Length: 126
Image 1 (spheres, rainbow, N blue to C red):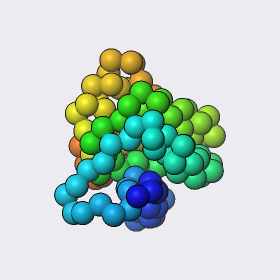
Image 2: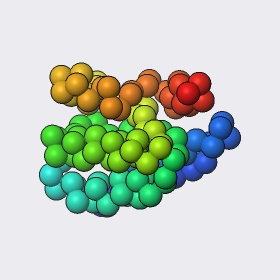
Image 3: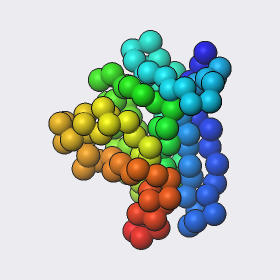
């Protein structure tokens, strides 16, 4: 099974929704992002960092766990996107990942939202 990012334009304000998924998942299943998937994740996140100046929602509804390597790869991608004039926020984030963001102070770099709609509303207001 491989990791991929499915991208779609949202009708609201030119926002790009990027859903992190893994091939072969059954409906309702989640997957773990750990060191075994770190290279594939960095490649997928690299696709997002080419979206210069874009507002992006990273949908993590299918991700149940991130280890430190994949967590920091996501934070680095957010920093890169921000440095290029864009913004990356996350939606449907598992409570363990939210806790990591708070413990590390990375919540100031990557904002989390309970839904795609609330993430889009936040991006539209900026």
